[in-house]
Length: 79
Image 1 (cartoon, rainbow, N blue to C red):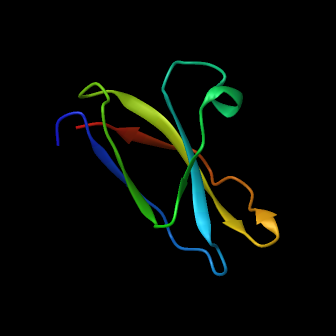
Image 2: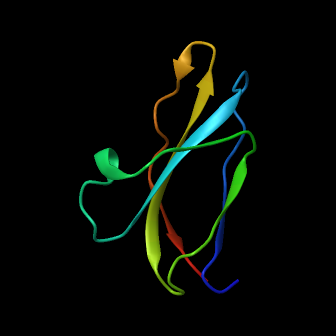
């Protein structure tokens, strides 16, 4: 898909939603500057990005006891 990428993760028991962050590779401040997005499913479609661009992504589960730790960061290449 030009300008798009699918990001998937494993479900976490007792999670009621997931929060993810994404930032283009090479832009500093990823941990503090990217908006978080809440989802109720274990995948999302990244859209509106430059074809061939690479982004860093991480996700965490949200549950009754608060958020889990962030996942390790992965690199996602946009089609």
